[in-house]
Length: 301
Image (cartoon, rainbow, N blue to C red; front, side, top):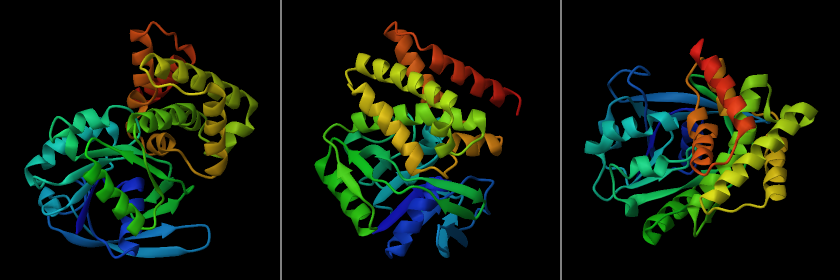
């Protein structure tokens, strides 16, 4: 079995690390400006609390590296999902399974423009990682992967792969619930971490930031309910706080993007929640405020 990962950022390298440790044949497809057009062996370092490991990985910016892959994981930024699939569609096997555990809402629908929905497995991951440099990542909080999809056989294949890599996985009857849950948590963490330039744990230690987080989560839960996906507000507030505590030293992806002067995923997290809210005539002033602040910062990079 050959596994492909499209998007060698922090999460792409994180999953590649676990797959390689389990002796699973894994290749990485990077951006055109990240390496030569030829396939090459690249080493990257994984830093954890107790040690540092070096892992060798086959990586290329040429899409033919994913030819023959049974399962493809998409870990590009949400705003790049559609273009990434357009770039590789001619190299994807006709029976390949496409997996998205990306941040934000709407990735599955973008992928479905290129492959049939019965080949898509989607959901969320609560793993954390910080990219320290082009060849080094730091492991963040450990969590679980929640997956689902229309095709039970495809979902089972991804479940078995993740278990082989010793990664915790749960199959969800309604993966959209998992996607929304992660989006709500991210909405309450990412913009605050990025704006205040602090790790996750510091958000809940700051009374003002913690209060703002509660308001954002409340708005998002109300918006989710308007789409038919219902959460308990107190539970989601506590879950978001708990994620901050469990990943206390982790720099959220939006802060990493800010520090690297990259475009953030604010549109597919807070932005799309605001959009759904407008359609349902639900006011989201706190989400609007952090959204505008992040977009203002992006505009002056």
